[in-house]
Length: 431
Image 1 (spheres, rainbow, N blue to C red):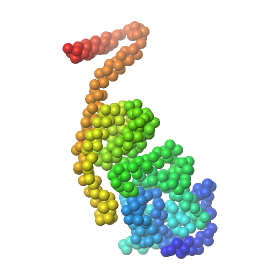
Image 2 (image 1 turned 135 degrees about the vertical axis):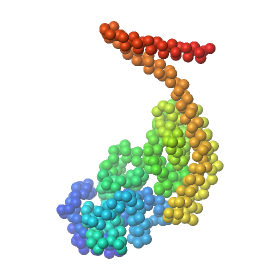
Image 3 (image 1 turned 30 degrees about the vertical axis):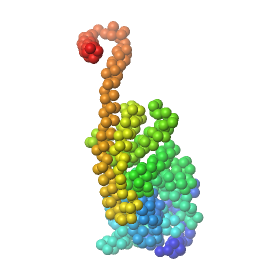
Image 4 (image 1 turned 180 degrees about the horizontal axis):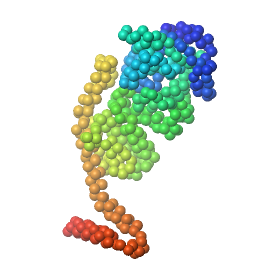
């Protein structure tokens, strides 16, 4: 159904009287009551900017061009994306809708674009078009219960509502990790202030800043592996790693790591990002002896805290990844599509991992061994300092007044014996 036909059909039902008892929404800075109407399913189209599938849509459009929800083929593609966003939960929701019908009202624009309810509508469409569905089930899905926004609603009004009623509330079906970062950046690019993003997404000011910073790091990561715009290539667990990286980058920029001179801040930051991006892509596990935080956690005992360790580590990493040739992403996209494209991209990643894994693993292990050895060397001094501090904390007046000092005497014997052993070890080292 064309846009003008959708507008005419929806208007014939609402008579442009959209306000009234039904569902309360925060709209244009005020809480207003909107009527709920039953709109024929054919008058609805998906919101291709839906925050739930933003990363998948951006990836698809980067590879194949812009999706047009008014075209049947693209509409089916969007529906598949929505279903795959959480297949287990969607199976349950579909069964509930088939049995009981739509329980929660959605939000649409005056021309039928789904602002809130894309997932529910897609499941209702799947029931309507299912040849095996019971006629009663199909009857429950012929009309979509929804409020209708006034024709005067702007794109900014629509994005504000979508954010508030999807990302800004506790969703029954969670979003993929990347979606909130992309959505925050989309809002910023559309002119929303940090304060507005904070309000509509239900975040704090500092967390909005972090969302935008990690969104930038995400693009940097994809650029590092020649996958610009392909957000579905982000590996599992990327979010936690990028949050740690973001913290380390900010400390470098502030000059909080003492050995890095001002003239080398940019170089260390660039090296740190490239190193971390490759180890994220490599996807080493704890069972391999790998801890991502060992590279950059900016407390004691990590590679970034020691200049010599860091420089050796970067050099060994560079030797591991240099001269590795990979097929370009554009070439893969030209010869593959859909599920075949994902398989080919996975093959590309696996080939890269097989080539660099042993050398990158050795680079990590060498740096970790040096840090651990330094920690062990420092351990006796640290322990003895703790003993001295503990003994200094003993109240001698309290000891003097104690009637039964048997246990204290035994403890003193143990302390004297241990000190003698330490003295012998010191004397032995001096011989």
